[in-house]
Image 1 (cartoon, rainbow, N blue to C red):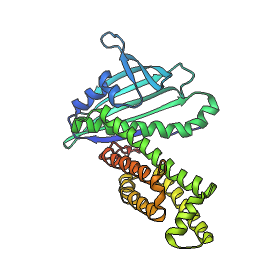
Image 2: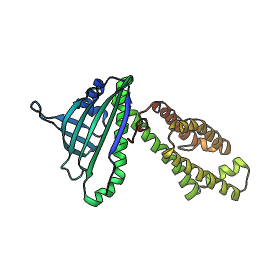
Image 3: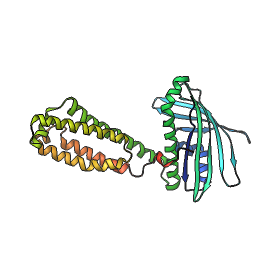
Length: 299
């Protein structure tokens, strides 16, 4: 199965030497590149290729270890620099068996065009090739996201650790809100059709039980759709701002339709206030987070 090499390119508005140092120094490199947890250079003699080892912590109990070789670097007359790599791992758990690639640093107006291209062979034969249909876009996305983190680090001074804290906090919030909306639409409204849902709608709109049933079904379907929108809509701040408006309205509507719910355990007041607070935190976290979209992904 023929695969396309992974290509990522980004402009960074600092001199080439700064980008070179941040990507060639193993301690600095491991800070911004999601593909590595640690990078350790091995002793070498003059003119020999630089050998190194790397690790990637996949989870609390799993670490992938690998090897690499920097095959050399080249500086051209126009100021461009490049460095090529050969890497791989002997661990069977890794989806990547062996690969080759390069970094390239080209001078542009007010900065550096930093790019990489690499390809690799998959583990596990045909099954690994099939899995790579899903893994390759993920590793390409991780590379592009890492490049944007590097850009923000060098241009703005924000450390990679703080950027990734905000980025992954936002991803957790996305999953959280998606789950909340899908669950609230699916379970109490469509599957269980809870009597309180019907009575609140019937009382609030002054309609019959049969009509209320249809309205509850429609609301449940809309909530499920909104839950999936959380997963696919790009500008999450739009959704957060919408929730800041919607959650107070839902709280008032619930209290007007059924005032006695205010004294129930885990009632609409406390539940929706919690969601409003978490939404507000999301608005703070989501400001200027790193994104793979800032990179060019094709030659």
